[in-house]
Amino acid sequence: MEKNIMVLAFIVFMLISIFIYTDMFGIFYDKEIHPLITELQNKFNKPTKHIKKQIIWTYLEEPDFLDKDINIQLLHKNKNFPILFNFCLQIMNNKVNKKYNTFHVVTPENIKEYLPNFPIEMDAESKYPFKFRVDLVGSMLLSKYGGLFLSPASLVMKSLDEIMYKLKFNYDLITFGGSERVINSCNNKYNPGNYVIAAKKGNPTINLYKEKMLSNLKKDNFINSSTGEDIFANVLTELRPNKHFHFDCTHTGNVDIQNHMIKVKQYYGYEPIEFKDKDNIIFISLPYDIILENIEYQWFNNLSEDQFFKSNIQLTKLVLDESRKIKK
Image (tube, rainbow, N blue to C red; front, side, top):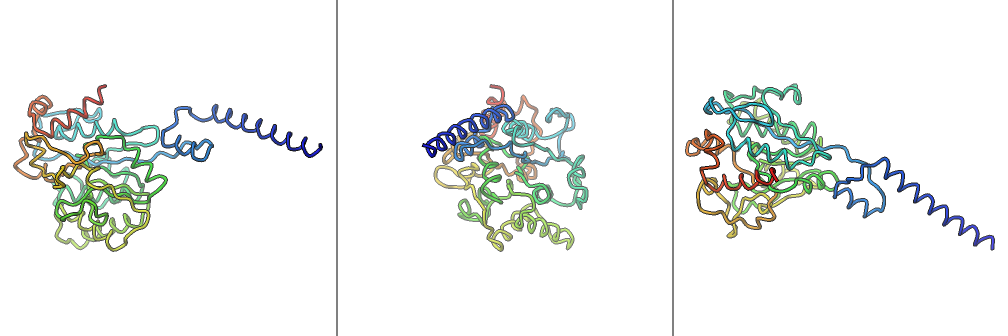
């Protein structure tokens, strides 16, 4: 009898404890829980504390060839940038889950706030190619702070939550897509593109990537737009890091239904692009270095907003589709 009473008392105690526990968390925790956090709660059957915000980065500077009469709005700041970059930034900003991430646009004006010892001047008159400078910024930001670094011409088409969740809970390094200069690199995690990279703060692969980028500067080695990508691939091949996840080209919009790499000229054409697994695309990594440096595309970089949408090329249609989603 006494034993039964003790068991009953224990059950009552547990029920009261559960009631108090869940009621308290209903008070102290925001009920609008991130879906990925909800998944964890369901898995472990207990609330999960609000996670520390992760950082999503991009870098942008004003090219020297732009028509200075074209003045567009960049996240509430007037700047002269190609209209494509402006829309990409606004779409990025919209796709960032601000409750769990922060979005930082690094520019020549504020770079010292993030990287006080940044070794070179960041402007259009630099002797170093824009792509190399962006790669250097990305490597140093990820090494020091961690997060997700997006190139300035990343057209984000889906929520970035899946990437940020994997980075927070499952992996230390995340790479994307493949190199246009390497055959069959889409599924090769050791030959990714480096337009977009995600990593935890102080990740050894990113640290070595950064050091080798800086070493090239100190030695004054020949540097071109592909230097950063080559260094990154070499570091990945050398270290073969654990806890490394790779999103193949179907997630970065780099391949068509015939598994051919999509070329820049196709984005500037009128023929519809048949992406492989379009619903699977998280973002399209547009090769901004080619867009900015190739004389064939200079006309596009100087378009006004009205001219941009009237151009009717495939790139414009993709941007317009995503811009419409923002306004809904």
